[in-house]
Image 1 (cartoon, each protein chain N blue to C red):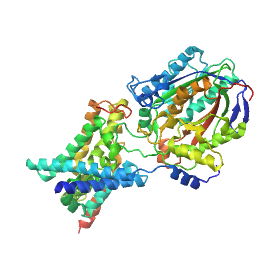
Image 2 (cartoon, chains in turn brown, orange, yellow):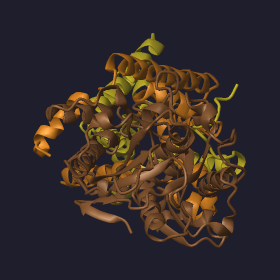
Image 3 (cartoon, rainbow over the protein chains, first blue to last red):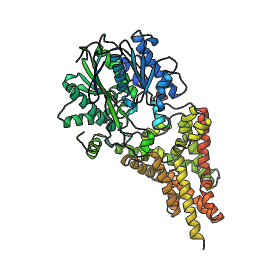
Image 4 (cartoon, chains in turn blue, green, yellow):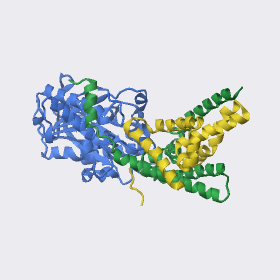
Length: 341
Length: 147
Length: 123
C-alpha cells in the first residue's frame, strides 16, 4: 500500500518499476531535436485515417503498441489503462482503446494528463500486487486546432506567446518493483488560477500551478532542487519556463541548468515555427517516453522530477471572460529503487 | 503564492514577448496594398472592355473572392497570412478565406451539419453586424427624409 | 497614379488593422466587425464616397468598403422604396460578394482535400 504523506504527496511503499514505455510522433516532431529518440515517426499526419480525430486515436495506438513491444508484454496482460487527451469527452483515448478489451479509465487533465495518468498507474501498481498499469496520452495539432482555434486553412497570425500543439503520444507501463526506472513519490497538484485570461498565453496561465506543485513536493519530501538531476515541466514553453524560474527565484531558489521544459525540447524554436514552444498532452508524454526514461534506465539520469502542467479551460469559458485555471502534478522517477524512502 | 493576481499579471507581462510590430505592420501594409492594387487592375480591365462602373466593382469583388478561395483550397492563403496578418485579413479576400476555410475543415462532419452549418462560423458576425448597421442607417434615413 | 493611391490607402487600412491586432487583444472577427460597421457609418455620413473617388480599389477592397457598399445600397433602396429599403438595400448591394464566397466555398469543399499546417509546404 502506498503511504499518504500530506498535501497531495503519496510515497510508494514497494517502489514500482516502469517496466516499459513507447512513443509515437508526427513529421514535425520527428524533424525536431529529439527526432531520433522516438519509437515511431509518421510522415503522414493523418496516420492513414480520414479524420483528424481518428488520426489522433491511431497515433495513440502506435504509442501503446510500441510500449507493449519494448516490454514484450501481451495486450491482455495489461490490468488497467489510464488514458486521456485534449479532445471533447476524451474521445481520442476512448476511440483508441475501444476494440482491445482494456479496462479503461478516461482522464482529463488537459496537458497535465501524462503526469496525472502516471500518478494513477503508480498508485495502482504500488497497491495492487501483480497488476500492470498503462498511462497513455496523446495530442494532435490538427484535431486540437479545429476544436480550440481555427480551421487549418484559415489565415490567422499567432502571437509570440502562443504554443504549438504537438502531434505526439506516449505510453508508460508501470508494474512491480523490478529494475529502474522506479517511481518513488508523486504529488497531486491543486488548481491555481492567477487571473490570466489570454488563451494564447498558456505558459503564463500554468506556471503558478507548476510552481505550487513542485514547491509542495520539495516541502513534503524534504528534498530540494539539488536532489534532482533534472526538473522537467510539461509544456510551459518559453514564457512559462521563464516565469517559473522567476517565481522560484523570489524564494531564493535557483533552478538553473537542472531545469528544462518538454515544450522547449521537442521543437527547435529557431528553425521550427512554433513560437513559444510545444504544448499538448503528447508533448510531455513523448519527451518523457522518447528521451528521458531511457536515460534513467541506463543510469545517465539518477533522479528526475517530472511535472506536467495543464490549462483547465474551454473555449466556452474563455469566451465568457473567465480566467484560465492551471494544474500540475509531479512524479519523482529514480534510478535508485531503495524502498520505503 | 505570495503574489497577488495583479503582481503576477505584471510578472507574466514582463516575461511575455511582444509582437515585433516593426515587422508585422509594414508586412500588413505591403500585402494589403498589393491586394488593393490587384483589385484596381481588375476594375480597370473590366471597365476597359466596356462594363459599367457598378458592375465592374461587383465583378472585381467576385474575382478576388474566387482567387482567395483557390489559394485557400491549396493551403496557400494561410501561409501568406502568417506573415501578412491584417494585410490578408482586412481585404475582401480575408472575408472569403474566413468563409472557405471552415467549409473545407468541417467537411468531415458532412455537407449539411459540417459545411453548411459551420460555413459562417468566423465570417458570420461580419454579415450580421454589417446588415444590422445598414438597417439602422436606413431607418434613420427614412425618418429624416420623411417630411 | 491611381495604383499608387490604391496601394497607399489599402495598405494604410490594413496597417491600422495590424496595429489593432498587436496592441489590443482584439480577435480577427472583432476587427472585421469593427471595419464593416465603421464602413457603414462613414458611408452614411458621406465621408467614404469621396474617399472611394480618390483611392478606388484601395477604399473598396478592404472590408470598410463592404460597409460603404451596404450603406450605399440602403440609401438608394430607401429613396426608391421607403422604409422597406432599410431591410432590402444592404444585402442587395453586397449580394455578389457574399454569394460568390458561399458558392466558391462549396466548390472548394467538394474539390480540395482538407488543409494541414503540419504538412511540408508544397513545392
